[in-house]
Image (cartoon, rainbow, N blue to C red):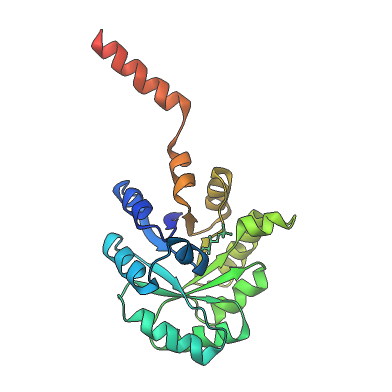
Length: 211
Ligand code: E4P
């Protein structure tokens, strides 16, 4: 599983990029709004930090408006991936953009059928939301397994981005379930790195060395 960072905060992205294990970034309107900055300005800055797929989401709900928004966003950088909601208009916009050579990430996926439709509309990425599904009492990891199985049986090349990751258990289980990518918030990325025995080991090595 490749690791993307799920944030629009450029300081977090800079810190994560230094770790050398990040190959992309996902944003959404809520994450962008949290920064209180101009959308295009933030996305442009992110593209300068990470050389990989950068998802930027459209706000419009009608296909023609989504396409117009997407074409503007796609001008920012060749790494821009257009994030579209899994709706009828979202699928129409997805097919149109893919036919023009623009990469897409179909988001807000909560069922395997939604993922299949997005894949067949040419989505480069599909984003099932683990945490938000868990919140409703449905196992988000099972959804990743189902999508991965269907994509494998039918030789579908769309990549699965495990999104709405809330803890380190989600990130590990998403990798085991067959997600191609996990998009992970910065605090969880840091937690994935930690173990008390690692800290104790470093302290002991240093103490022994100094003795
Ligand atoms: C990323 O593509 C998603 O928008 C994000 O992971 C959603 O996370 P949340 O459910 O924690 O808002």
